[in-house]
Length: 628
Image 1: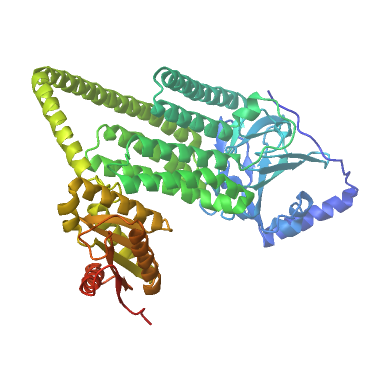
Image 2 (image 1 turned 180 degrees about the vertical axis):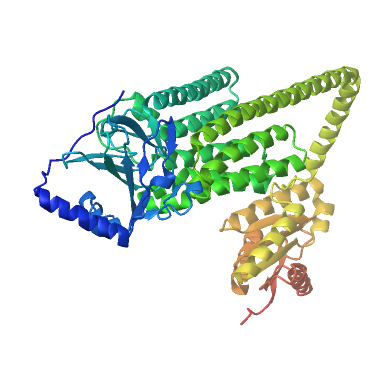
């Protein structure tokens, strides 16, 4: 269907006939002296004509020139013909606007209608200006990201129906500005040929997007049935590819009426970046296991995160447009080189991945070369892109299926091996029941023996109920190290019952045991601090550990205990004192981490010997000065 173009406010020509004749003579003279750079086009009876060699181009770095400016004689000489028509129209600077001028002569007497197509749906700003026979401007302002109703014709590309009067020359001005591509393919179609071309284009789109929807639904069904993450991730990649191409093909705008706020012209860049992130994540999860390729797997995960965050660069459209070709190039090189590397490492089913990315590489390479303006635009790059995406999707789906089948085979094999091992273990368990019972019986006896040994090694003295020698030895080492770290004094007292052998000989061992129990109770009652320890050292000897106690402190404690024992008045006729008494040797030291507690024990024992030598029933001390 041909749409009517919109005209600006008419501006009637006020020149008289003689004035127009004079201007024609002047223009003819100027044309001989300074010939124009444009190449006039004569309409012929052909289906489609590439307009590259017929356009004249004017770059507008300031983006301020208007249709009135470029249509003047002053700017006419500044239009340049295309230097290399084989490469198509190349917009070398994405920050500039470009004016394209086309002069068309209709040699026939009747009017003819042609369709002008700009095969680049990502151009954010496209303008078409034309002066009709009455001198009025007919203008259209549209572009990718603008409301779809601004287009002259309902199509993904920019279509402009043009009518050329018979026997006259018409001039068309196109203003284009893009951030996503440097290359343009412009074609002038016969109406019937364009309609056939349009039907074929829609057929190809319907086939691809129908295939994409079917693949996505299949992957969704497989994911819901198996809960296999690879199916879900692959389905997301298929959806990402479909959405990316749908935006490039203007499918959203074509299907959904949209006349509200403008669609962002950089949406395509964002969709491509997200698609690359999904594919990178798929490869990382599918092939680059953490056990086999830890570094490469982390690199792919980082690249996926980078691609996912890349759409934020759209806040700076110029930077995004400059970076996108390099992103595509890096993606192609990374994916294909990784696939080849995995093939060299003999990874299972990776040859399918190589084939998939080789096809996708060719399709994206065409788009990349077209974006950079390094490839001539004689045909649409979108066809190559659709073919690359379709074949790549099929091959990748086959690769996923093979990989999951292999994982399932490995899983079944592992389950079978596990079942065999379980049966073997059960059989061994049955044969070892008798042995196990014997082992249990033996272990029970050993536990009883260990319990008896543990009881004998307990920390409590069985006769007196206070700490025993083993407990004393442990606490002495602990308090020695603690005092060494804190640089505090540590005091020790050794208590011996005077003439205790004679006591046993006279009163019997039971009386001797009872005497020791009474002394133990006196010693426990005489200890005021929780950190002090009284223990039976052996026989009739007791020991006292007094942490953080200097020489005068331990001497006071010892004298108190000596008097308390004497105050019990336990009869002992074999003693010169007529009652039970004790002799005590005390010692004080300031430990360090390089010394041991044996020296302190020896000092206390020496002091005890001195107390006995001096008549017993007394306290003798041996101390060490505090370190300066």
